[in-house]
Image 1 (cartoon, rainbow, N blue to C red):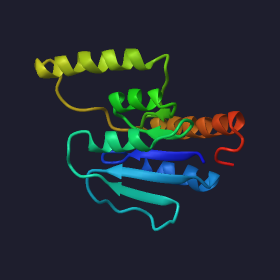
Image 2 (tube, rainbow, N blue to C red):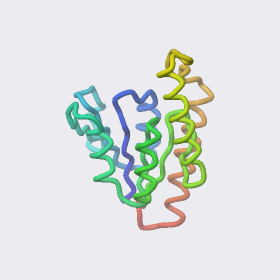
Image 3 (cartoon, rainbow, N blue to C red):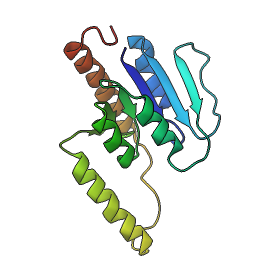
Image 4 (cartoon, rainbow, N blue to C red):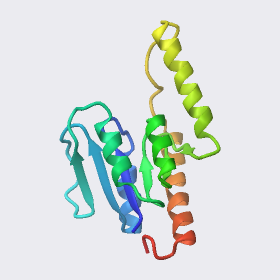
Length: 155
């Protein structure tokens, strides 16, 4: 059955995930390094994996199945999940695909080097209303596409 995994520690769009998952009757697993409040719904699970480096990423990659959906802003996690056959959507609504993940990893590495050199300071821009709207649209499209291709998965 189609499942949504959320790299949850710094995820700003959890409410949007809940709303779409409720509509499609899908299960959601939030994966985090520490406990967080979640809605009291049987279809929402919280998996606390501890503070080890990449513990959440490793847990998601170990559980994700082809045609599941992963929500993350972590480009390296996105790359690993794509290799497992999952669909991956960034928190701003940008889908990660086999066609764009290489460029995303290269850009991430370049920006990391610039930050280390002190050329770039600060974090990502705040999430805008248009980002939330794009995210909702991409999540809906991914679910519809998976269901068309695999009618018994998540039906």
